[in-house]
Image 1: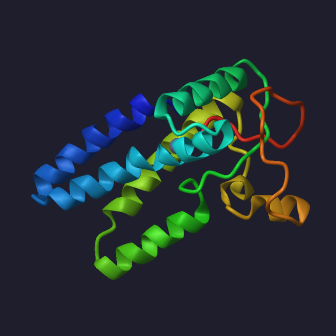
Image 2 (image 1 turned 45 degrees about the horizontal axis):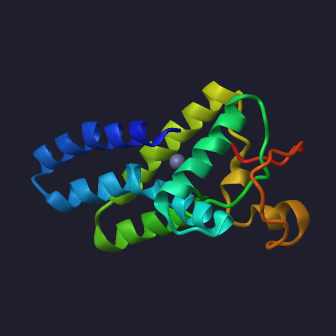
Amino acid sequence: MHLKYHFAVGLIIGIPIYYYTNNLWNFLLFFAGTFLIDSDHYLLGAWVTKDLNIFTSYKYWMHVTEVLENGGSYPYVNFIFHSIETFTVAIVAGAYFNNYFLAFGMFVHYIMDIAYMLNTYGQFFGLKRWSLFQRYWDHGRMWKASPRNRKSKKGRHTSKGR
Ligand SMILES: [Zn+2]
């Protein structure tokens, strides 16, 4: 899912939230949930390219997206904010602070990502792909074979378009 759509929906739903609850925190948390959680792509892109420049990371993911949308594949990777575990933490924190707008925003973001994946690839790759422990579930180990290159590889393990 391209960033601009998350940005737009963060505002389209977030502004009425601010309007009706009259609480800026509610807006900021919701917006962070819908838009800022894609910052995990920056973190991973910076890690893979070994370049902290945000534009390098952005170009990297645009390239990966292009490869995927043209039918290529890419070794799947862990997106730290796109996971059942992080979402659970957001819900628990929501219960603690009695404010679920961050978790709500993340939920909206995930729905958008899943809709995009269903629309583009015809599947959303299962809940396992949404776990930080996916590598362990698949291979019995966590930290092996991080993608080090930009070339797409044939293989059934792919992470697409998140
Ligand atoms: Zn996303």
